[in-house]
Amino acid sequence: MQNTKQGTRGLKQILHRLYLLLDRRQKANFVLILCIMAVSAGLSQLTPKAMGWLTDDILAQERLEFRAVLPVLLFVLAVNVVNELIKIGRRLLVEDTATKTEKKARGLVLASLLKAPLSYFKENMTGNIHGRLNRCLEGTVKLEKLIFMDFAPAIFNSAAAILVIFTTLPVSLAAPMLLVIPIGTAIVLRQIATQKGIRVSLLETKAGMDGAIVELLNGIAVIRITDAAAQEEERFDGRSELLRSKEMHHHVQMAGYDSLKFVNQAVFTVLMIGMSVYLATKGVISAGDVLTAYLCFSQLLKPLEELHRILDELAESVLLAEDFFRLADIPNDFSYQPPLLKASVPEGPAGISLKDLWFSYEPEHPVLRGLELDLPPGTFLGVAGPSGCGKSSLIKALCRLEPYEGRIEIGGADLAGLTRQQIARLVALVPQEPFLIAGSIYENICYGLDRLPTPQEVEQAVQKACLAEFVESLPEKLDTPLAEGGGNLSGGQKQRIAIARVFLRQPRVLILDEATSALDNTTERRIQAEIEQLLKEQQMTILSIAHRLTTLRNCDQIIVMDQGQIVQSGRFQELVETEGVFRSMYYGRLK
Ligand SMILES: Nc1ncnc2c1ncn2[C@@H]1O[C@H](COP(=O)(O)OP(=O)(O)O)[C@@H](O)[C@H]1O
Ligand SMILES: [Mg+2]
Image (cartoon, rainbow, N blue to C red; front, top):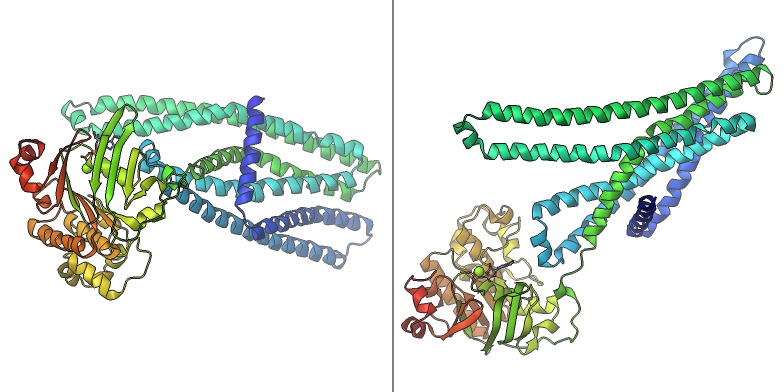
C-alpha cells in the first residue's frame, strides 16, 4: 500500500516535470489532442449505432431495397474516414511533442553532464552513462506516447462505449454488464503484481548468462589447453536450462491469467447477448439495439485485453523517465557556483602565487601538501618530479578542476573568486593527451576560441606549431577531417594541433603538461623556441611539466616535487649539479 502511494506520487511528479519541459505551443496542442480523442471516441460509437439503425430498418421493411440502405453505408464510410484522418492528426501532434521532448531532454542531460563534478565520472563508467542516457531518453519518449496513443484513447473510447450502452439498454441490464471492467482490471493488477519479480529475475539471469559467456571467452586459451570445452558446454547447458524453465514457468502463469481474462470476457459477452436478446423478444428494446449494444460492448473489451501490456510498459517507462531526471538533476560542479567574493580579472601579464596549497582526492590522503610559490609575470617555470608526485594534480588545482584548500592567485586575483569564463580567458592548458573533436584540422585548431581568427593568424599558428609541412602534404590541407579523438594522427601530430590552438588563443598563463612528450627532439626544440618567444613578446607566464628533463633547460626556474611537496628549486644547471631528486632523475636513477 505504502509502495503504491509512493509510486503514484512518483508518477505524478514525473508527469508534472515532463509537462514543464513542454513549450507553450505544445501545451496548447495537448488541449487539441484531448479534443481529438474525445471526438474520435464519439465517432467510433457511430458505426455500432448505424448498424443498429440499419438492422431495424431492414426488419421494418416489407420488401428489402438495397438503395434505401446506401445512405447509411455512405454515412458509416464517411464517419470512419473522418475518424482515421483525425487520428492521423493526433498521431502527428503526439509525435511532434515526443520528438521535441526527446530533443530537449537530450540537451538537458548533456548540459547536466558537461557541468557535472569530475568525481561523478570516476564513480560512473562512461560506457554505462552512455547506455543509460539512450535508454532513459527512449523510455521518457515512450511514456508520452503510451499515455497519448494507448492509455488515454482507451479511456476515452471506453467512456464513449459505456455511454452508448447506457443509452441503448435499460440501466438494469447495462450496469451489471460493466462489472466486466473491475473484474478484468483486478485480474490484470494481480497478474502484474505476481509477474513483476519474475521479469526482474529473468532479466538478471540473462545478464548473468551474458557475463558467463564473456568470462568463458576470456579464458578460451586455458579451456583449450585443459581440454575443458565439453565440461564447459555441459555447465553452460545447465544454466541455460534453468533460464528456460524459469521462462516457461512465467509463460504458464501468464497463460493462466490470460485464460481468466478470457473467461471473464466470454461470460459477460454471452450474458450480454443473452439478456439483450431476451429483452428484444419481450419488445423492451429493438433488434438493432441488440447489435449496437453488442458492438459497443466489444469495443469496451478491446482496451481491457491490452491493459496488461499498457500498464506493464507504463511502469517500465516511468522508471526510465525517473532515471532521465536523475541524470538531468546532477548538481553542477563546485566551480560553476557563483563565487562568494567576486574577483576582477587583472589586465596585462599575470603572475601566479600559491599560498599554503593543499589538495586531495580522498580525505586523509593529501596529494599536495602546503605548496608555496610566487611567480612574477613572464616567468617560465619548469615542474619536475617522479611520477605520482602530484604534478598533474597541481594543474587540476590551478585550472580549478578540483577543489583545493589554501589560496591560488593569478595576476593578484583569487582563483576561487573567478568564474569559469574568466578562468578560460586567463589560463590555457595543453594536456598530455590532447582532446580532439571529429572535425577538420581547422576546426580543431580554432576549438574553444570565442572570436573568428583571420586566415593569417591561423597560418601563423600552424607555422609556429611546426604543422605547416604536415598540413601541406594533405590533399584537403586545413579542411582535412580528423577521425574521432584524432585516431588518424600520430601522438606528435595531435600534440602539435593542441599547441597551435594555444598559439591562437594567447592566454596569459599557459600550462603545458608533458605537452611535447610525443615529439622528436628537433621538433620539440623548435616548438619550445616559439613558446619562449611568446614569453618574451607577451610576458606570458608558462608552467611546463616535463618528464624529459632537457625540455626544461631554458626555464627561468624549476621546482622539483616529491610526494606532494616542493623539495628543490633552482635553474637547470644548478639542479643538475646539486645532489637531490632532480640530479637522480637526470642521471636515470629515479623514474
Ligand atoms: N583522479 C584521481 N583520483 C584519486 N587519486 C588520484 C587521481 N589522480 C591521481 N591520483 C593520485 O594522486 C597522486 C598524484 O598524481 P598526479 O598528480 O597525477 O601525479 P603526476 O602527474 O606527478 O604523475 C598519485 O598518487 C595518484 O595515484
Ligand atoms: Mg601527470
